[in-house]
Every structure is written in structure tokens, then in C-alpha cells.
Length: 261
Image 1 (cartoon, rainbow, N blue to C red):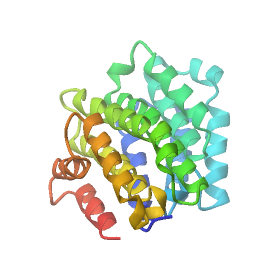
Image 2: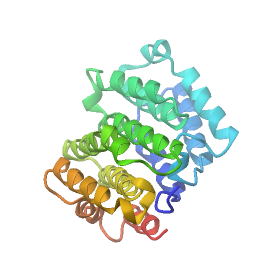
Image 3: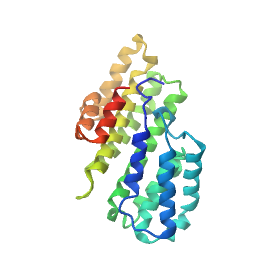
Image 4: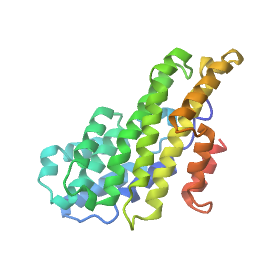
């Protein structure tokens, strides 16, 4: 795949643990599940975006699989109501990381349907993000399956509308954060939208294999992306997301490190 898609994700994945395990009400058994999730994230050292959903080691796969087995709908129903949003968020992330995209989306929808989900701002954000990340992974996987290139016709069929949908979902998530939500969580949403937009840009750059003859097709794709983004150029939107994270913040440094690869 194009070198711009191949980027380190260890730091980005590690943020999930802090995002999901802070401020949760605890029970003894459920705390063990949270610990298992934290351990899974620590061993989930995926090295590239083109490996989304494909884990780096069997230990991470097994841990995420075990978490899913311990968090069936019946198991979650038996938890204290205050824990349920977090349980669905952890299950959704575990399913996403294992490539169970339909299941991850369904878990997120169930979590978002809880009457008290708004009382768990961190979990609410994660649950809102997951459907967008599922769309992004579906698109990246399809792009990879095509050998890292796409014809203009195949690109136009689904890529523009789906990338725009994922970007809109993440923009909506960032705009609806509750007062008092830690800045780091908000910045993480900006990072994910930045990453989705970057992937969109990479796919456009490889229309017709990136050959000189496909330049007009790529320009048409960029114009359509601009229209779908409300008149904002795709590159400008990428830079805008990066600028929303302070220059001295670790997430901003991660963005800059990735952009240099």
C-alpha cells in the first residue's frame, strides 16, 4: 500500500485504555475485565493502517476474544446500570480490533441506546466513534484488497460518500462533548477524524494507480470531496483537524510523526 498509509499506530491504540478505563464504577469481576482490556491494548502493537483489524500477535487476539466472551448481552444486562455504557464500549472496541465490524457497530448502537449513556461522557464518545471507525476500516480493507489502487468508477461508487459519512460522524462526536470532558479525549476524536481524512486523501492519490494519466480523475475526486466537506478543501480540512490539537500535546506530536512517514 502507498507509503502514506503505512504509519505506526502503537501510540494511537494505547490511548484507548485511558479513554475507556477512567472514572468507571467498579465491581470486582468487572474490574478484571477492564484489566484484561488494558492488557490487550498494550499487546496490540499494530504497525500500519493497512493492517487495521489484523492484530500483531495471537495474545492480543485471544485477549480481545476473551473479553467479548465475558461481555455477552446477558452478562452486560447483569451489570450495574452505571457500568453498562462502559461494557458496550469495551466490547465494541474489542470487536473492532478483531475485525468483527458488524458486531462492533451493533455493540455501539446498543450502547448508544442505553437511557443513561449520556451520564458516561467518555463511553458516549467511544460508542459514537466506533461506527465511523468501522466505515473507515471497511474502506481501507477494500482498498487494500484492490492492491492499493482503484479505478475512478469504483472510487465513485462508494468511497466519497462513505468517507464523508465517517468524517461527519466524528465531527459530530467532537461537537457534542459535554462540559468538563477532558481535553485529551476531545483531541483523540480530532486525531481519529484527521486519520480518516488522511486515508481518504491517500485513496484519491491512488486512483488509476497514481499514474500521470489519472491526474484529471484525481482532481475530479478532490473537487467532489470538497463539495462533500461543505466547500472545504480536503487538505485544508486535514490541516484544520491537526491545528485543533495544541502543538505541545502528545496527540499532536503523534500526528506530526505520522505525517512525516
